[in-house]
Length: 227
Image (cartoon, rainbow, N blue to C red):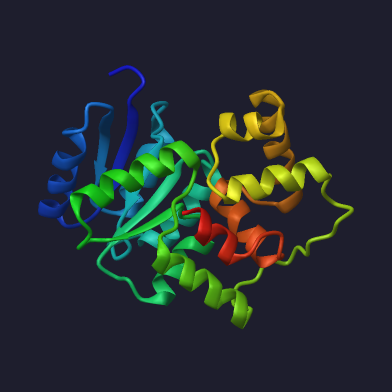
């Protein structure tokens, strides 16, 4: 299937996993390329294949290697893979842990099929999708100082153009949309994004968003107004 969004699933509940796979496969541009019953099985498979996914739907509570630890491993080894937490646990501590180890979105299992599909599309297109509940958790973490990044924003670290790109990324604009707004080429935007990853020591778009919030480059209200 050409130009399809390649997806892997990790969930120890067979019936639920098969249901999600069926839902996803109904979309003509989605393709489930692997299913794992636990995190270790997923990590082992990734180390042996050249056919990496674009997105992984990850459960939290799994035997052998849970979703948080699995996300941490994959985020370090395969930063281009976008991970969406899909779980029945929606307490702030679970959400916070998954976001801070690199998850790009967080969905609870009682979400509608439309929400699941829409989230996958948003993550695939923009790199992350934080709903209102996730944004509240991030905001609370900022207030309490929980899991704050060690790096501190410094005007001299970033160029004015890099700051502009970072803000537009946080507002969920795509590379082409950012290029149009700043009147530069998409390749230039990609170059700025690469330097932002290096300077912030983050590995994906979700990490950039959290960094920008923690260092007051953008605030919650600006992001909320743009959603």
